[in-house]
Length: 266
Image 1 (cartoon, rainbow, N blue to C red):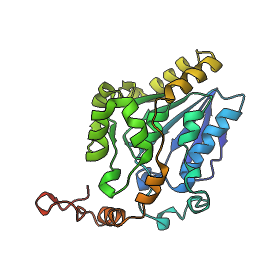
Image 2 (image 1 turned 30 degrees about the vertical axis):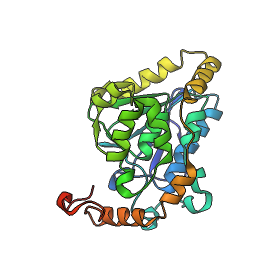
Image 3 (image 1 turned 180 degrees about the horizontal axis):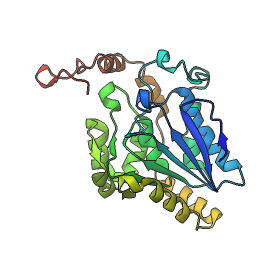
Image 4 (image 1 turned 90 degrees about the vertical axis):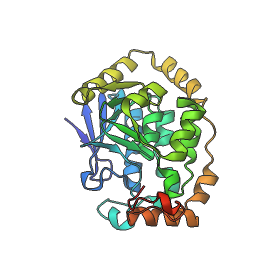
């Protein structure tokens, strides 16, 4: 089995015949993505798109977490990566556009907690297969962040009512509810997830590549434009500083009315 370097010890790229696997492997940080990891996922998409020996990519995680989003621990928690690309490239490190525009099929094998950037990856994948133990969440507003990607993507998947519910409350959604609302396509028993994700990739590869890509392009046109300016502005506000501080201190932010504060992080 060939293994390609994605530039970080926390991602593994494995070739299994014509299907590549990108495995998020950072259990000590619950698979939270550093800037280098985000870029590594993007690089994995690029590798498969360009390699004639590879026909599809499956993205998954280890343990009971798929991807919980970006690392909220700051630069100190990213020192074991080979580079901190965020300060150099900004949003260009992110894999979202690459997944959306990939000519090869991308399957998300959602093995557990899926939120933030992980939720974007799952929704933009051609097919998301979730373990029956998986949960989905969009907690950004609980931190004071306006996630322009999720606000543009989710309404096309689940409708406005469900999108409001998820994005504004940040509540957790189980795998079967996620399938019923249209957030994901398939749910599999946890122990069968790898086989079911491989089957989904194989089914995608039955379609003619050119026709498959054009259908994907037309469907993805249903997404609203991403308001990147609002997202960028939101991450520097006093609300976001308080939201991140509250998260690190494991308490409710000060905007929560005192009677509803739980003494735990949201």
